[in-house]
Each structure stands twice: as structure tokens, then as C-alpha cells.
Image 1: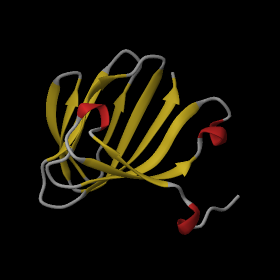
Image 2: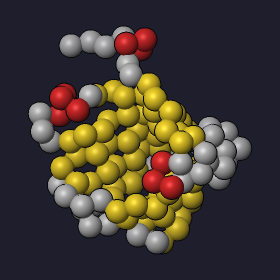
Image 3: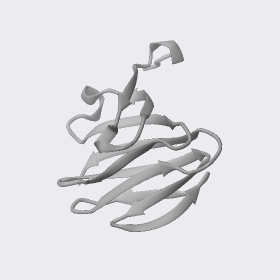
Length: 115
């Protein structure tokens, strides 16, 4: 299977998980591609000052791989600065949020899979 860049589904989500501003996503996989094992695999772009609000995952886990930029990441309420090359994992029963605190777009790959 091959999906060309212009074939990938793109969307813009406003105030994702009660965060601030817009999140631009390019979906790399669709729900049916997970064979029942996940629900999101997408590249996210967050402009400076925008965020995904704090939320918990139950029965699933979410990983972020940071491609570009800098962010304030909440790992169960413990706030830390993350940057390009860093990886986070929010396991089932845990919560997280992310906010672009840098001067450039924050870009990362997000993956949600069943726990």
C-alpha cells in the first residue's frame, strides 16, 4: 500500500481536549488500518502558544515522537520541557498534555494504540 502526500487525510482540531488554539493533523493511518489495535497515527503541528489539554487514557496508550520544536509536556501533572528527538509514552490510566512553548511550530508523530 502507498498513500501519496496529497492522499493523506488532513484536519484541524480547535481546542483539542480543551487546549488552546488549533492543532493541524495529517493522518498516516485510518482507523480501519489498525486491525482493531489502535485509533490514531498522525503527524501533528501546533503553532507557538497552542496546546492539547490535559486528558487521561483508559484502555489505550499514546506515544509522541517530537520531530521539531520545543514544548511543555505534562506527564501525569509533572511538567517538563521536551524537544526534537524526545519520546513520551502515556500509558493506560495516566494523563498528559502538551503545549508549544517555543518560537517555531511544534511537530510530532502521535500514536494511540490499545493497551
